[in-house]
Length: 412
Image (cartoon, rainbow, N blue to C red; front, side, top):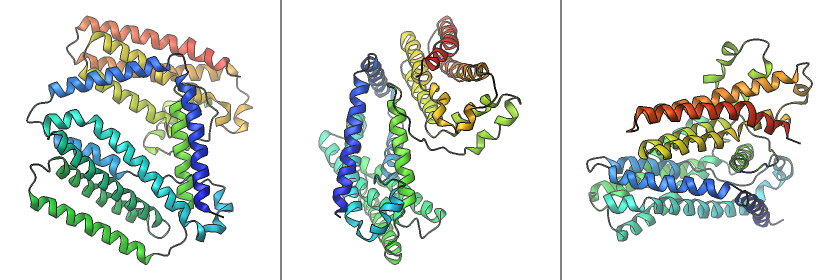
């Protein structure tokens, strides 16, 4: 069996499904409009940021931190499924070609993502760092740094079965620090001293040699099958959840996180006799994507409001956030998400609807209030802020108590 062909087949199937879903998203009535408006808002906010940026602001440090995180946090995608622990495990000694092609694929995708990200930063680079010619040299340097991180991450994954998670995290943390410093030196290489460049080059070589020595002493097998399977499950859940903003898709089994730092409060805040309130809130916080979507939407909206303190921009941003997040909340009531016995609880169906409505009202209204408070610190008039806040709360109330419950009732 040619395992490299197996990887190519899985990759092709996955990309075919992704393109089909993308076409469904693009064919949606309001999707192009929403994406276009969001792109215009971000472009305007970016240009306003460049105009506002003070000359003494340590932008090189900030950009180095922003770049080093996606450079270092590499998740090698292998398309390994849970069933492979049974069917492919006997072929483990012949899986080298499979993972070799996987590394080639990941290098290509991560380099494409890096190039797009750096092109977005091109106006900022020309403003504060150097010319386009310098930018091309920086782009090549970052590409080498990305490939180095991919190889190092692959070696760290291979060491998972043999070393503790604390040791693996230590290796990652050292790599993150080196990547951050190298990113900073790369950005300012026109003005950097040769001694600093040589120093961090030596650190990179030493780290690579240290990691390779550890890997060379470890057995060649087994591969971290469970790690790859869980990672693939998370990646699929993330993409399905993202596409779910725009179209209804068949649900996959979403991974969950414990998040004990917040779930321990639920029994104290939710009164007894409200099992579905507890169930829905617990699902919201432990869901690996829904809670993250809420935070990402909130952060993105805050950035837009801060850099574009215009009445209509702020008002449109808040309405867009209400729609983007509110459209995700019906996922919580999907019966396929819970065990069968949950559906036969001897509880009035109205209690489920009421619990869902209250949860939607709290989350969406809290989103509106936070964004309105952020708008109050901009140059908008108090009357404008009050108008935005009151209108947003009214829309949140209508959205939570009428639109979303009806959307659930129409679900087949």
